[in-house]
Image: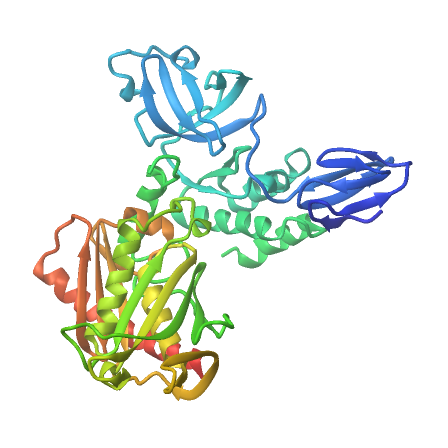
Length: 220
Length: 269
């Protein structure tokens, strides 16, 4: 079966041979899509890669968020989903003076963090790994979270092309935030253009070649 | 205003630094507008409607006419009502419900620009003095907010009024026959109001900001220019301006309004 764009409620395939996968459901022997996205089939398993919708947090995701509030023992962080996340001072790998918590993160600061648990109490973040913490430099912008896998590419192939092509350091968070940092603002904007180019047409085939071409054509 | 992503600080610093060099993120110069497109007659039920796009900013403006009694202080003049709504679909910053400060300001600035430039010949909208006059309703809705709704609203309102046709009026019953449009346009005068908002970011003055840039704006002056004549002025936000800057703003807005006028005329052909 060829890849095709489907809408919620659309019948993707009929027949008992097929199994419903991610974002699909079986109704009266038909596999029906639950999301707007790209339908594909592999070994009789039908799944839909969503193209729109909000970010659904998962454990282990690296996300970018904005400090919303400061509490007694941590920070409330907005990571762009229905719930706010919590960053405890126990998860900050340095000494934190409880009387001067805004010295570490103040309201409106942007942080890059990892989701280490999702429980009944909410989402808990951690910055105890390398590369996590406050973002002090760079252009930060948001893309559709569903296109993040396309920007990263298979095993990071796409992101590698952009990094090499533009000379910028790029961090992509699972919730759709992109942080670009380069030597000057000019190349940062160029890297942003490349990312925008990918997110505008996430479902075309042969994207890697097109991006390589785009970088070569527009490079000054 | 919680749960809203404003421009993050590091990005803001980058924008300001770039503006000092005279450059902007999307490659425009400080005093350039984005591409303006106007789509005509998008609504079947209105007397005239347009969809305005400035870059990614989108607005829908509709004109509707009705017959009603005039106001006591202007018995021989038609009425003009401009209302603006910022729909939640256009940005995550807007919420449903009664218009907030921004939406009220948007409507009133647009209203003032059109009214004070005497764009509509309100005297000709009088049917019977003191008893019956036409009321012109201009409804403005935002569809997508990527900054500069203020200028888009006036461009849309002026364009919609320009193409609107009067509905037929049944003199015997004194009612408007909706659904049947006459050949006549709304009586307009020679003037042509165009709003230009000049924003101050750091030391730079820019026009037509994107959403990111508008977040950083410290002061906004909206001037409605009517072919070189200023018909209304509104200053928002708290930052002060000195005399030199104000003079610059007058020049910038006059220059920009000429360009926009040409663009509107091209689009309405």
